Image (cartoon, rainbow, N blue to C red; front, side):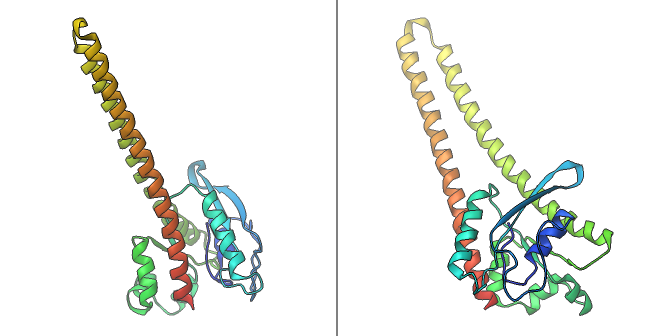
Amino acid sequence: MLVGRTGDGKSASGNTILGRKAFKSRPSSSSVTKVSELQNGAWEGGQIVNVIDTPGVFDLSLGVDYAAREIVRCINMTKEDYSILLFTGGDDLEEDDNTLEYYLTHDSPDSLKDIVASCKSRCVLFDNKTTSESKKSEQMGKLMGMVNELKQKLKEVKSKLEKQLEEDEKEARIIGEKRGEENVKERSGNLENQLAKAREERVKAENRAQEIQQQYNEEIRRLSHQLQSALQ
């Protein structure tokens, strides 16, 4: 999902990511994008990439409240639980013989540094004006590398949690099966307790996952407010 100030190149970045003119993009003092729009394309190996373009954060013609509602609506549409900072203007930095790393370290305000830290320094620089196919591929490669690395980490955490729950339930069944027939009632009670405990742990894990989801959503909203402060 692309979020940013009016005229900062969100739609152009979406077109760069998808490799085609999927979104309307032109120089303008007001948002070209009036309503959030979803477009998709395929990355190397057939990986599907979904891109949501949103209205400009500070577009007075639309109103800040409208833009905020659109962004929140789009956040609820996305299933990803992470954020990456995509900076436009790569051509400007190149003309000044500067790098994104140097800019973020030496020339950026503290509020922007806080946002970068909140995103675990996941930053990528785009030059939407370049005609170099190798440069376009390099930009996309870095972005998709970050996306896939984060997806893999989330997948590993989920897999580990599910595996632990399965092992707990299996252990509970084994303990029950080892009991003698003379202790059928006791065995049944213990097994039920073990299974109840496993189910309780699963519920706790699901609740925790929901809490994490809510925290991520709140973090995105907080970053949006920080971004407004940084750009004002």
